[in-house]
Length: 378
Picture 1: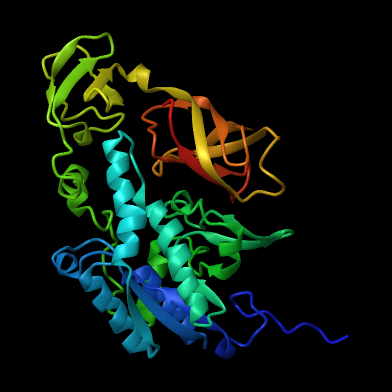
Picture 2: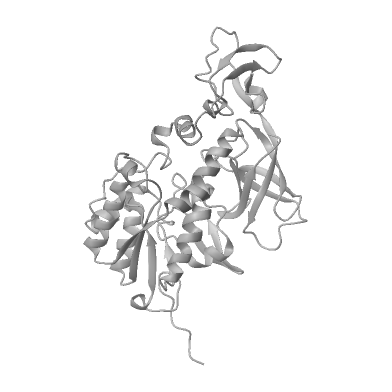
């Protein structure tokens, strides 16, 4: 019997020249290196950049992905490396799928993570379908996460560089999407390696700073964005101690997040106080001592399961990450349904808020088992 043709570097049984790859290009160094590297390897590369919000406003904003200058940088890389590049207007899709929910979640007292929704609802949904319409064999991104083949198919694994691992933001990637996606930088062990590759290919973005802000939230000022999106939504109310004492007034619940200590405007007290709850209905910011922030039981819904076998039924010992800045910690998952569970943290964590993600990891390995969204009861 003839042997199957050897797989190329993207795991496909074709010669690179016969393999079309759509590269999602943000204009930053990571996705630019992916595009240049694949082109250098002989692949049929097509670059696509998304315009996600008002282009005029984008031109005035630096340091965030998908802004006007970044579109220009992505186009320049395509010209330098000689592959086609398209800019797609996804402004309405982005507003409907990401920005509106971000605003409504914040007004409801949650702490949303819009970058996850963007990956889930825009980049890995609409853009992925566009890639298929372009007859691509796969879509590549500059995310720091690894795709590895397991016995049951492709698996999601944490990045080679734990300091740049983006699995928290990609937990909702489905098995079907993972079949089509590729992450060529996931195995690298430092950002220096990426920048060295950018210099090797002579890319002008080799020294470009990393994005820091959410692309539509200038300078991290969430409240200003919410007030612009929902005029008049920030109503004043009271700052109340958990024991019932009224300590002061505030100009809107949207200015506060669970776990916040600084900027409460209630100085002169003997004990350090933290925001422990946001009572949106009564326009109250509830504060209390740090120990009130400790959470052990976390209700999770909208679960995307990437582990082996069905999610329901079996209690599992795993590690979970409840904030992007925290390392995974031991926990027990108790499924309630196919998409809901109660997660018990073996060591309570502080500052957990509805709207954040809870991401599941293999107990002693690098595999990402999926995750869900933290909701009521926190």
